[in-house]
Image 1 (cartoon, rainbow, N blue to C red):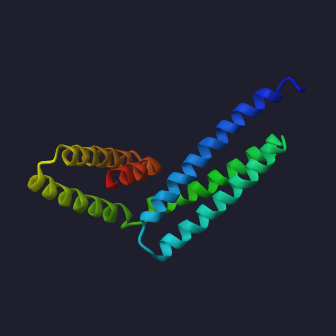
Image 2 (image 1 turned 90 degrees about the vertical axis):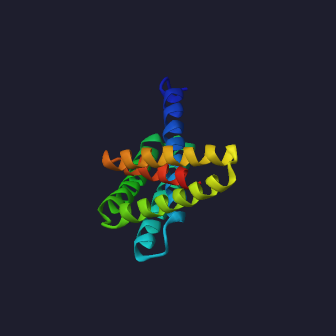
Image 3 (image 1 turned 90 degrees about the horizontal axis):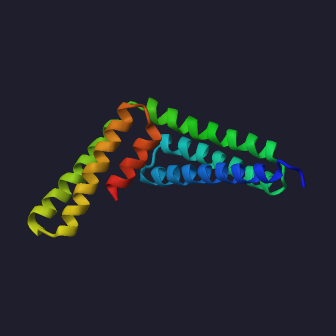
Length: 154
């Protein structure tokens, strides 16, 4: 056995796991978008990221770690394109913020009429994640912001 063989396996598995999580989170975010040309472009890049991920897994399973890492990088390039599209879309932040604010306002009305402790907890959780999303967008951390928006909405 090559001395670096075991060392190569663990990091590549970690890289693949991290990539899978980011792709899955991005897919969950895309599901929340209204149908539009913008969404279709994002779906195309997400599919390409998934294809690169699949190739990376195949190469890793065949112990071809250099090629696996190449396809991991290519997958991240597609995810970066999605992030840049979201950042550059002029109405995106405004629309998401409006949608989130409306949902929280609706939840506040329900909690006022209900006084259910669990509902109050969920409302506070949504407000917490909304604040985290605002801060992440201001810090140019689009993927984190999108994940916080998703968590706030659900």
